[in-house]
Image 1 (cartoon, rainbow, N blue to C red):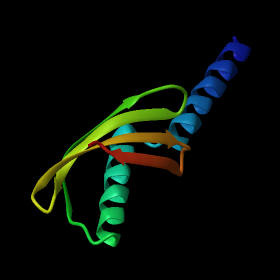
Image 2: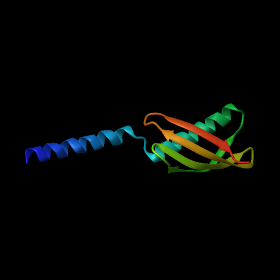
Image 3: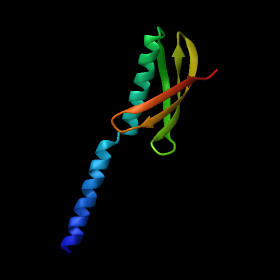
Image 4: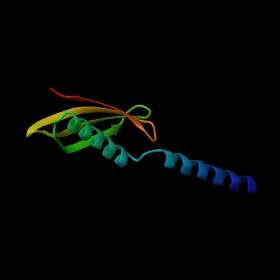
Length: 96
């Protein structure tokens, strides 16, 4: 019985540590949006985001679509993200 309880405690602890290392999808979405907006500002463009949806892809990857306006013109970006826990790799491309 003692081994069983110790195993349960260990498994629960491992789950908590694993969950603490991963960024929630909501936080990841916020960070991705902020990164793209900041990049466009650095390029002299004013991006107003109207929608960003990310969906889980393979492994640590996410794919999504960002919709918004730049200087009154509607834009759509295809977004690829790889979540590395405390950091992420981000790539986006403007649809034409």
